[in-house]
Length: 176
Image (cartoon, rainbow, N blue to C red; front, side, top):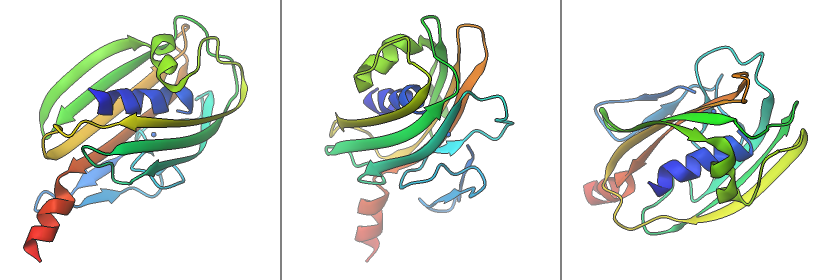
């Protein structure tokens, strides 16, 4: 659940789209047209973003990819064209491989508290830095997260997606 909280926090605080997977290995490929600048697996969802009120400038994760049992530091920046008020929400999906673990609609204003913010989130430049302790017990495998964020009036804030493979480094080291 903490991984999904991290991605909700990213979508809430700064606000992601198409990772493809090479099914024969643990490699994840990036669609460069949708890639969020910075060192992270975050991309914009594969849909139009002309009406999004959040422009993401950069997102960095340390380490990237995240590792179970280690602290994950998130640094993100962007610009909101409009304030985000109570009633904003995020439609969240988390999959483990092809299995859907979470499919929910969450209150965005509750989620942004995870990155020490609160609603209303005023328009203008936003910067967050957050450290999240990832549990050691995250099962190895591919996780896909989609966070589609809307204002209280159903206007698009942003839509982000990411894929993270836990255990890939360990598997690669064992092959050497």
